[in-house]
Length: 193
Picture 1 (cartoon, rainbow, N blue to C red):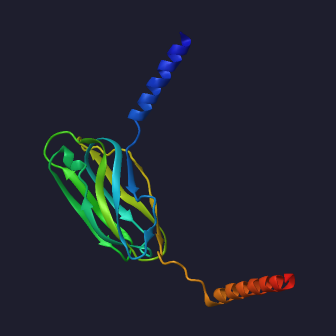
Picture 2: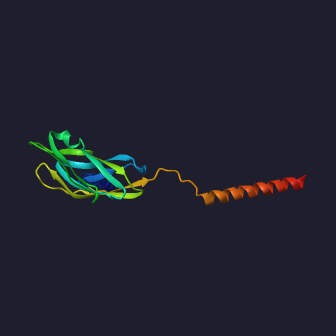
Picture 3: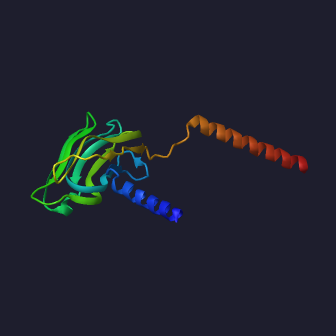
């Protein structure tokens, strides 16, 4: 009987811990590197949120490797009704997109669950690893209370996409090596005859 009580207590504790977990704000950058000169859309997602009525955030990125092209609003908050939002102000010199926001208006509860808050389009302008991170984040419930959250940064690898061509000196060494192998082979054939 004691085993059953411990098992039930563990299951209830696990369910409570899941219910009290903070929502997670994150980027979806995929796993593939981006080719220099191409554009790519990255999703800003929220997961496990309860009663989200309004949000705002800013994004920092490494302007040596990425150039922000545009921001579009995601549809997650609109599942709760009419919204009013803004796609922020892009500063490619500083590597920031400031004040991306959206809010429901009118009465009623906020939205719960997981979904897309915004989509950010970047152009890859330099080879290297760029970090995307959040600042100035505020998540509000329908009662106007700000609630806790976790924010996950992301890394984007930008590659040149051009196959490397061996240097002339390397080609000369390879050619000399092949000529040497051919000469040794001929000498071995001539010695056997």
